Length: 340
Image 1 (cartoon, rainbow, N blue to C red):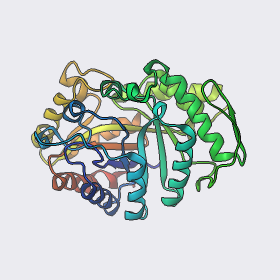
Image 2: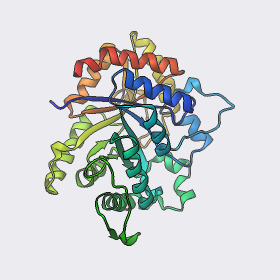
Image 3: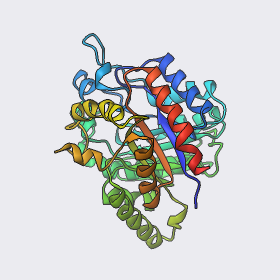
Image 4: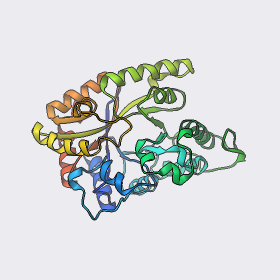
């Protein structure tokens, strides 16, 4: 069986965002034996989204005087590269259509060196949260064009990463003999993990990605998506078994199930209409995320592992950084050892 890995999202956005909290969470993850730390990506972020789309922290941590702070993803990873030593550093996911792919390729190649080859580059089309915070409008990018742009931009980044003289003649960008160095430290380039929960996202991963990292899919849906990925990869002459299947999950863990659910439910309710899939009832979320006591979490993780998942990006819900560290300690003590 492939090694099962666990990562934690640090608060580069949300009610507990801040440099000290980001570093404290990342260093604790490394010390506790987690495999990765993650940030997420938006440039434009609204006060409304700050209060209703919480993927680090919790609804209880919101305060009336907070601004919609969202620390830029790649800059944050560059800072964490100097504050950590071994742990993988990932972004899930760059809003690819709003990024200049030539510049993004340069940034991520540099970042791969700064991290000493620990970088994972997640890419996504842009979500309901992106549209709601008018990010595409600000950048002047048609929301309807995001899939085609993402495909082209991934190809451009790969070309720049791997070709001494990079050229591209595409639908939106054309350039010839661009000499852009350094090339990434990882060969042939940092792993590209594709976000998105749809069949199209699984197919895009099979064509262009090294990993798939959806959210809001149940174990049954993950297994189905993995089959689509494997089939599509074979159609394109690729070995789908070499493509990482990851998940991005809201999570709480406690010794007492009621405590874990009390941490989870207010934030899920607050965020229920801001994700790509509207949460019509709480059972929908409970079927797709990881909440509960140690035994609940063990069982849930096992269901995703049985569906083919080998990497978990945990969006733990917490009202303070001390509470985050307490949950990470429980995960490190009770869950990680079962997969080592």
